[in-house]
Image (cartoon, rainbow, N blue to C red; front, side, top):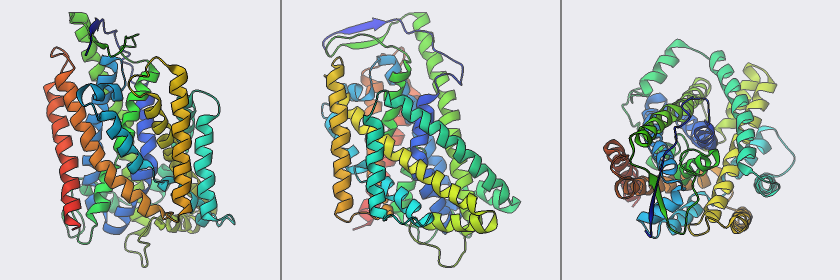
Length: 444
């Protein structure tokens, strides 16, 4: 580090409904993976006794999200820059792990499968996958301010999806099933505790990783916090470190920011995510659990839609397919935007806005072409692509937790540091990497 500059940390906005975009978008990016697919899939096959994993996964992610928000606001720089200060290969690792974790166009393929089979469209599934992937890239590359475009689209989709799921939850409500769901959150299943016989630990680990958001997509919170202008937003010199000044008012403002971040993310990330996981899992269990010939892949969603059409009305079944496909499209959109932001925010290009935009465009274009190649080669089975990505992202989150631990320990001054965060981040890192190692070793 060349120089350290101390700045007064401004009083944060403490109204919970102000500046909730980052927390909202991070959970919205996860709806198409864990919330809409993996946890309902597991609940339909094994019952509610596995939901403790969702509670654990999203709670660990809450710690990571709040740590990311604190570090970004206190240091006035995104997570990539902070990580590069404590580990010189951090940027290379984030790029590599993002490509192998999210480069597979699984969400485009899943959205195409839902639309093609669920709505009986005449267009082929593979062609539809190409269209969805290219549409996501085009939406980001045409015009400006991708953050506002993504935020607007996700607000619309979240609103529609929440209303639809709430309606289905009420329609299929049963007191016994409802109580069973709550027991599942503490690991009580039907004739088993915590882990049922026959459960694929690979899939279970992927579901835990995608409970909330998942993998490096959590870092989007850091980029979005910058976009909202939270905390320190300074002009800095090359490699200059900026920290909040050591004055009573500045320190008190950092504490207010941390408390506000906990409240906001607990409501919009943790609360919204857990409610969606619970309700979507409840509906899947209510209509599919114990049924004969239950699909072993993610086409169980199409079976659900058929039942909704029969039990309620064909419009409900179609709306479920369309809304789910739009959620998956939103994940694909967020993945491409994240990859573009990684390229554009490479440490060292902080003041070169034209260069950042150029890197953003090239990165999205390259990942779109890579996705097209993957689909063209026949790797188009959505369940396989999503499971591969989710397991890799479990390991990635462990690395993120350890990097955040090092930032908390080595960069943040003691007067705004937190022993609690250090302990929680260490536990999070050990959990994800330990679980990943245990599952991988079990495969051999």
